[in-house]
Structures are given as structure tokens and as C-alpha cells.
Image (cartoon, rainbow, N blue to C red):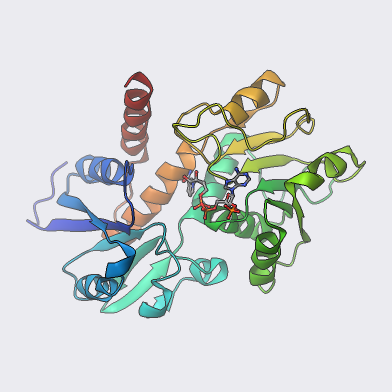
Length: 304
Ligand code: NAP
């Protein structure tokens, strides 16, 4: 499949530092898989050059750049410079994907739908299912209260889940819940990691899902886990680690050893990139090719 329009697509990633980003590999695989020509650039902008963001965004507005991904520390910094936000980006209060529609600069957050899509594909959970079997609201325990946790809590809350956020700083957990209060009608609570043993020992709630949305366990600190030592995992819970490098974190290894079903965040990573590609090009993203590219990187890292 080859594109005969002669167009060369320009995408990029804005952030700092950009280190070993998977995004160029995923988007290059997407371009190749759809037969489109183009390049994915890294716009590594140190904080002292933050004013250059406006120039970069103008290139998107004018169509010279077809699409941008945004990562730490600019996911919120870009908000005032955009013309429109999707309801998801507005709800989460952070943007990871930018594109222009007829000169209008739009910001979206593809992390939230990507997380939910991957959860559904891995667990088969459906909104209308009486799940758990009691017919009660499904209950999730989310570790971390940063940017990724915000997208996860938004996605779960919108999908009808009852969410507990475990923050190492309680004020960060409270701030997360406060900022989502107009977008989520389900119950949401926050506790610190110190409160986990008491919460887990309580008769209710029973957790259907346990999510790690902290960076703990990421390469190179692969022996670390966010779950407290000497505390059993909740029974029958599905364990989801947003970390994808290494593919099996200490958190996931312990979950599997406890007989729990578990997954890493690679599916979410591929899906958020696929959704961005679809915004930028209007083409269906070749998810299989993108997934294969992601696996090649994690395999390469593991063998490096
Ligand atoms: P972030 O905004 O920096 O937030 C990290 C959160 O984890 C904060 O609440 C932080 O608390 C907490 N935390 C950090 N170290 C901790 C520790 N030792 N114990 C307990 N809590 C700790 O980062 P983020 O953007 O949310 O990303 C979090 C992770 O998700 C990263 O590994 C990232 O790669 C991954 N992620 C994956 C995907 C995917 O597609 N799979 C998408 C987005 C993010 P403090 O503020 O107190 O440090």
C-alpha cells in the first residue's frame, strides 16, 4: 500500500527530556503500515525555552506540522495556547495530542480512551455487564495521583467505576479528585499508601482492578514495586501496570505469583499512539504493526 499523493507527513513529540521515547518507533511503524511518507521529530525543549512552544504550535496551526504528541512537562503548559479542547482533554486538564482542523488548534488526551480500550480488550469487561457478579459498581484501586493516574481515574469514572486513589501525598490525591468532580458522578476517594493495609483488610470494598499509575518499577529500577511489602494483593483483582519497560515489572511478577491475571501498559501505549495517528491522518492506524514495533524495542532493551 503506497500513498500516491506525494504528501510528506510531519509529526513530532514535545517534551523534556525525551530520552528513550517509544513514540518515534510507533509512529514510524504507523506511517510504514499505511504506506504514507513522513517523519516524526523530537522537539526536546528545555524549560528555559518554554516560549518557543508558541512558535511550534503555530507550525501545527498553519499545517506545516500535521500533529504533535506532548509529554512531561508540557501536558498542561500547552493548554492556554490551544483554541479548543476535546471533552476528554478538558475533563482531565491535560493534553497529549495536538492537531489542527481548518486552522483551529485542537488538544486531545488519548491516554484515557487508550487505557479503557486496552482494559476492555484484556478483560472483556463491558459497561453494561453486571460486574462484579453482585451487580455492584466495579471498584478500582489506582496507585499514584500524577498525570497518568488522572487519565485513568477519568476513564474509569466515566465508565461507571468506583475509584480509590492511593497517593503518596494526600494533597495530590485530593487535588486530583477535586479537579475531576464535575466530570465524574461515581464515588471517588483518596488515601495514602500507609492506609492501604487497613483499606484492604476492610470487608468492603472488594477491588476488581488494581492499577499502577506510578513510575515505580520502570527500567532501570526494575526490582522496585509500588505495592507495600508484606501486604497481600486483593483477591480476584485484575492487575494493570501502566509501566511497559520492562515488560514484566516486579509488581506484575508478584501479581502473577499470587495467581492474579495481569497486564503491562504496552497495549495502552500503542492505543494512545494509534488514536493520535488517526487524528492526524484520518487513516485507520495499523495497530498490529505498531504493537510489533513496541515489542521489538522492549525485547531489544531486555537483551541490551
Ligand atoms: P507523574 O505525573 O510524574 O506522576 C507519578 C505519580 O506517581 C505521582 O503521583 C508520584 O507522586 C507517584 N510516585 C512516584 N514515585 C513514587 C513512589 N516511589 N511511591 C509512590 N508513589 C510514587 O508521572 P505520570 O505521567 O503519571 O506517569 C506515571 C507512569 O505511567 C510512568 O511510568 C509512565 O511511563 C507511565 N505511563 C504509561 C502510559 C502508557 O501508555 N502505558 C501512559 C502514560 C504514563 P509524587 O508526585 O509525590 O512524586
